[in-house]
Length: 320
Length: 320
Image (cartoon, rainbow over all chains, first blue to last red):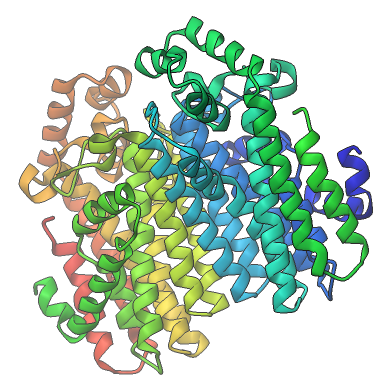
């Protein structure tokens, strides 16, 4: 099932989120407008806004608040990407040049800060204290998780727990917050909030494992960037970690961590793709996806539930 | 009058702010703890927390909320400094090495983001929507003002209006928000909120003009950094702008903007310090300070008022 089909019942609301995102660039400082226009047009899959919208539709909701928070969740994601690209000195994202490449680190740092302020504003406009606390906590979890991870680059001793802790902070926390915020805004009962929080967390874990698999198996067109980019930056993701577990005497990866030589990266990527490691990773992602679906079982049998199940299957199957 | 004397009636509360700042570094991620410890110990004059505390004491206040917001205002200031030092590639601040110099841009960007999230959290804990909106709006004003300004570096056509607009965004907005937030939290009547907002704005304008004067007239020990740093980065502040207005045929500054040669910077600094430009700038700062004091006149004659007047005089007189 394609994403469009899954999103079908919230298509109109997603369109409103899109309009709300476009209106973020409606500012009277030309340099800021130019940056925001570029960033917002570099569109993603809008999974986070979709999570807020679906999660907000099990109980009573105010559509205006849902749209604001859905927009804020997408912008928080965007702000962290813009800052990550500065931090990683990345040149390409989603098939387009990064902000830091086109306009320099200065502009990228400052426009990221602006976006964080904008998220806080949109969240505050809901006048819901719990959602505001959730937003600020998520921003802290993402940045502190990223800080911890940076200290581990080129460290071959990282294990699966390090990896899970890292992706929980950088991806699952925001998926979880996007779902939980929708549930809170709909005045859902506590167990429904908990269920959607768990769903979001597990969906985020599945999503990130698949992202990290695609960095090995994907091609440049599907990925919007060169494959193997994590390994070339000394970042150990699940496929590499499992490969190191399974083949402790193979020193291809160790050579990369010591010397970062381009042909070693292609060699390691080849070895990993030809081993059973990729299938193991897909199984792990599928398991997270399954846990996400199980979390939904206690929720009322309303339309968002089956669509969230479809979304959980989609994130494991996707190619880009 | 020294700052300690001015702060005397809020000394105990400022101590609580200090403890609250220290507790921000109480996190279980070692690399984050190390960075936060360093940043928080690099202490400033705590003018922004003092503004929130004094402004919050004209009417009924909850001390816990005032302390939280006073802490948040200092952290928002700190976060913007940490990111500014990345953006400007600064090596020294308040007499100490900058975060980017000691731990690199990556750590500085991420810890700045963490601090922005922490400010949002502290602000949300007050459960006051107006204060939350004020915080997010201020974060947006500061980053967008900085973005606009970066586009003007090395542009000799900047005039006083450009400069005032810039310092209003980067400094006065936060002084104004710190004062306004205190007033809001104390359930002050609308005209008192407006008065304290105006006081904060004008105090901030005076403070920044003096900062920019000290960058010419100060010495390294008082400043905690090399004097002339603005000009050496192509940043035109009020002394340079007035000098360019007054001596349109003197091409010392123009040469710096074209070629950034160190001896030209010392020459220009000498010329500006020996002209009447510095006195003109001090007069302008004094005028802002006077407007700050006038804004206070409608407030009840309680202890914070005279201390805020003293603070307005202090910021013009200070040497570092």
